[in-house]
Image (cartoon, rainbow, N blue to C red):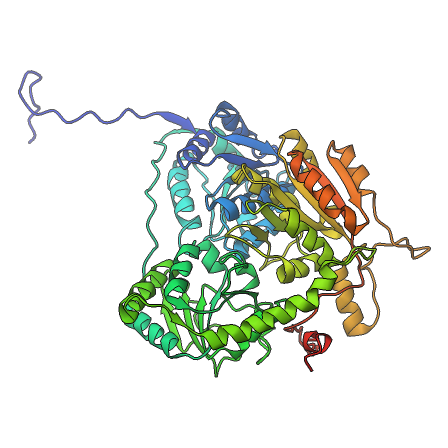
Length: 610
């Protein structure tokens, strides 16, 4: 039988437990975001998230809320912010249509390994199964997580305040580890507003992911490279995500190997570097595809070998694996050997593996540099042939303005420290082929999901992530018209950005496919149906109606001056450029959509090489 301890006894006393505090669910979310150093909330209000916005209002001096005019724009801004900063922000949307406007941006981030926390409001738990206003899910209560199941790494739906701390900690741990991606926190309205005695969690320390692969395998990889006659390094987007540029440059100092990238890996190496030969694939320049398809050993770093990177896996156009021996390094085991057989597959962090290769190579070569002068000279000849062919078009004064001339003007004017973003469309193909990307995150693009609007809207998120840099978005007229409301947000929050509207009067990348496959077009040109006259809104007038300065360029000689003015104003500015819609990018690779046959590259013929 236990005996009570007398009050005046000398029994030891336990340390006092920390006093519990009562917090609303929304307060827990906002305070945890602040502890994670999240600087912004991007989103649109709704009855499902007013509780969250009340908590954000009380913390407005520590986290800024930016209201946009479409939820899709919030997602694009968050995606671009992460692409530039490699730190996540959060979005907020309301139940029903509010959150259902977000999936296209979530999909883009998921496909491009970009991360943000999507906080979605839902109906109160007390109304589950009663089909209340704007509930998503007729057959299962509050079922918005099922809407986005394939578009996020995970969806958490805390139905009590007590569930929030662990959900928040796990969400942030998940979204930025391994292969980054968006995570959803779906919160019923009452959970924002109800209170509980739960602590606001502390932030977990970041776990280093710089693990090298198998050391014996890396020694084998070095052997293969040193013995090769025509080695090539191929860097995918994993090089950008993994911040591998410095490690890559260290490797090139000891192994002077030609480098190509996937289109989505542009910027991992300065494309003016003597060993940089550009992006491979469908829209790659001549030297890049010549390098990759003639390599005897290919070191693939963080590359998924998608269809546009590989000329749709058609053998011999961009890659020939085998006989090319592929050394594939990736931190995602599902990528190794997925699209091409790996002669040597190494699971590991790209930077960690490169650092080992550099150390081993220095030891083996006793401080000397291994070079391949004949191989590099061959590729330099290909690069010179390409430039000779392109230069007259880059200098052309033709009207309408040639695509090559517009990109030449941009390359001359856009500062090296700028953020340069491209939307999806035929202009994207031109940018992949012609734009010289100078550094990591210099070029932002939507690749895997390729949804229109990332550049148009995301350029504001990119500018907030790197406010000291000019921010320029190149948008097709088709993509810009999908989300022109972003101009209002730029004015409301005084976010300087330049939009260059590439006006070719239509969805011309699809028009060109229609004409190529079928010989006719429908619903791809913007025109007045009664007369067939090409139609375009007055983009400068549209911009001015939002309070944005604007100009139209129709002559090549005016390009640089107008672009310089737009950037120098350091205010929201739109420049419309009318571009020749009948000029297509020259082909050095190919692409196909089965059952259609693949096209034959036309560059060698046009350049007089055959």
